[in-house]
Each structure stands twice: as structure tokens, then as C-alpha cells.
Image 1 (cartoon, one colour):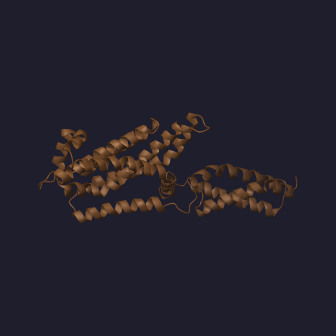
Image 2 (spheres, helix red, strand yellow; image 1 turned 30 degrees about the vertical axis):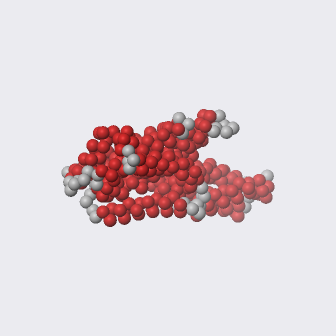
Image 3 (cartoon, one colour; image 1 turned 180 degrees about the vertical axis):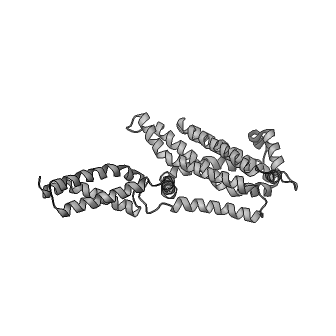
Length: 325
């Protein structure tokens, strides 16, 4: 085989390799997918370079292949450079793209959460028994203790104790991540379990809010929840999306076997699972170290409103112009 035949045989592979390198160098590629193929492609270029030198195909071809090998080695080093870089890429590109890709599930899960919440809010003006049936007498007593009328603020007083913020942060992480896990695992019941848990959380949160507005001190309640509500509720909804994605693999496997469809659905749902935990972690940080402290109500409401705007902007705009992750 002469130099021209060797070049013609490998030209298509070299073009694909060059295109992948350019995309990765510009940050516009599916980083995780392409990087997984780089070591194999670099090994192929190394073999071709050795063959070109051994067969003396000329300085031009050898120099071209040598440069391609160098580019590949740089990308391999970059791909393994840091866990932080991978996480930043996921949060900046992969997660918001996954939300937009599954926007129908996003809407569905919000509907299953908001409609029962609004229904409970409205029902209290007609019959307290609806709220009592959800919260129970103990739950209502707990709401009275924390958000009842009067000057005493139980939440703020408790947070004055040493280490209370970190203790509550740990509690919120344990509690809210546990709820997310339940919602995701509910997807194994063909998605019905995820929707049911979202619905029940909507009833509970809507009932609590309605009870405080009608019988307690709304300012105490909303100044506490406003800062972290956007992250916590959105994290819950995203967990529901992940559960539904798993459930759809069971319900509609298409031409794949059900086990294969479940595996593929799990892969599609993985960014949503990580994203839900990320949002829940932010919520726990805000709830643990900000929400209970005595700041001006308008400041707390402003921070809460900014949280909703930030999440909306993040889901709509982040990762656009990048190839889908």
C-alpha cells in the first residue's frame, strides 16, 4: 500500500476525528460521549503514525498524524482533569437541557402538584374538615405552635441556639432527599407512584399554607418558606420527572424488551435525578442557614422571588448553543 492509498483508506476516519477535536476544543460537543471515544481514536492515530513512519510515507503525512495525536492527548488529559469540571459542565449544560428535553413531564408533574395544593387552599374557606383530614389534629397543632398568631417566633428562637442551623440543615437534607427518593422510586409502579406522591405532597403543602393563612400568622410562614420554596418544590417536581421517565420505560417499551427499555429510560432520567438532588441541596442550605433568621420580610420575599426567576432563567436559557448532552 502506497502513501496515497493509505491516505484514501483513512481519510474519512481522519475527517471525523478532526471534527470531534474541533468540537471539543470549542466546547460545543457532547463532552461526556465524545471524550469516552477519544482514547480509542488516539490509539488508532498512534498506530497509523507508526505505520506511516515505518513505511516512510513522507514528512507531510507523518507531521499531520503527529499533530492529531498531540491534539488527542490534550483532550484525554482535559477529560480526566477534574471531577469539578464535569460537574460544572453538567450543571451549566446537561441538566437544563434535560429539563427542556422532558418539558412535557415538567408540566405534568407541576400540574399534579399544584392542582391539589390549590384545591386544599380553596377548600378551607368552605370546610375545615378537608384540611383536618390531611394534616390531622397533631399536624394542625404543630402549625399553631410554629406559625400561630402572637409575637413569639418558635422557629427563630430555636435557631438562636448554638449549632442549630447546621443541625437543621442536616435534618432538611435527610428529610427532603428522602422524599425525592420516594418520588423517583415511585416510577417503578409505571409512574403512578411518582404522581401519587407528588399529589399527596401538594395536598399537604397546600393544606398547611391554607391553614396558616386562615388561622395563623401568614407573615411568619411566608418569611420562613419564601427563600427555599423555589428550590425545594422544583427539586420535588424534577424528581417526579425522573420517576415518570422510568415509568414510561415500563409502560411503553416500544420495540425494545421491557428490561432494555427500563435501562434506557434510567439513562435518560439520570440527569434529572442528579438535578433534583442538586436543587434539594440548595434548598436545604437556604432553609438551614437563611430562612429562619430574623431579616426584614421584604428582603426575604425579594430573595424568594429572585429564586423563582433564577430557576426559570436557568431552565430556559442555560446550555443553549451547546450540542445536546
